[in-house]
Length: 359
Image 1 (cartoon, rainbow, N blue to C red):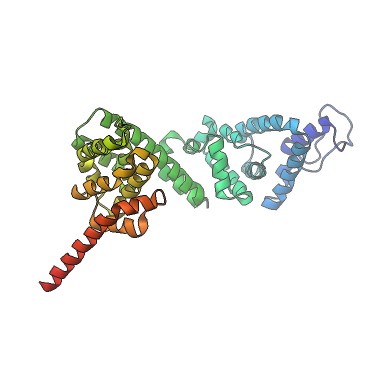
Image 2: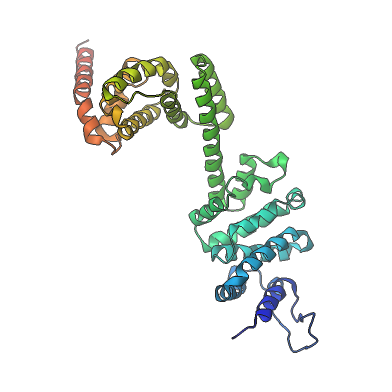
């Protein structure tokens, strides 16, 4: 065996803590020395990767050391203040490469949320260097996937002091450091979180039958506060409205029930479908819902006509959906349902154009 267990552990410790020429504390044998130390290595990715490969090979050969190594790295990151800026950089690069090759799990990053590291800016500075090294090994999707699995995707703002824990500050800091992918990832995560909270609150207000004017005011305030586009809100509204009812299981009765319910909330949907893209998203949501809930299959055309008459959907949006913007779910069934109404719309449009020309 190339290394004994003791020598393996010794190697790990020496690589992280010793200066070149370090010796084993419990052994007076001066022949057991190393001239290698990650902190004295050149500060470039390829050099640090060579050190990472040593750890990677050792852990792969002796799997029982994996958990111990993870624990020691967590402890090591807790004491980053003890290292110089250059040493922190090399350790960040080493950690990022080890995360990239799978030797370490993303959970080691929890050590960076320590108050003292966050307050002094060490956590954010170290994280930037670590993520750069990590993303040099793996693409952004792989990195963000690892963060999700470790439940760290929603904690990234904690790398900054409380007074700086904003998406804008994070985005600028990481974008300036050349990590725009992570900035975009955080914005998406925050947006998803905001939408979940908005949906939960909307569901509650609809179940309490709050006046539509109050719901409209609340949604507009949330859109402004969280910079949410109308296209994101319209789908949430549809979902909440449809979840607010215990639907009849009989197909012949559910259409009548749906039309009565949706007529009540059509003014709410109309406020947040003022853009063509929002209308198309609503149409697609209705299509998907009717397909996924079999009792609604025959109700699709009736719902669309109701929304058309209530000024929720425009003629242009319906025609665009019919020609090119429909989704695959139930496509043939729903297009067939809409055929006569679409023909009526097209004829009405042609007559209108003809009258315009004559005038």
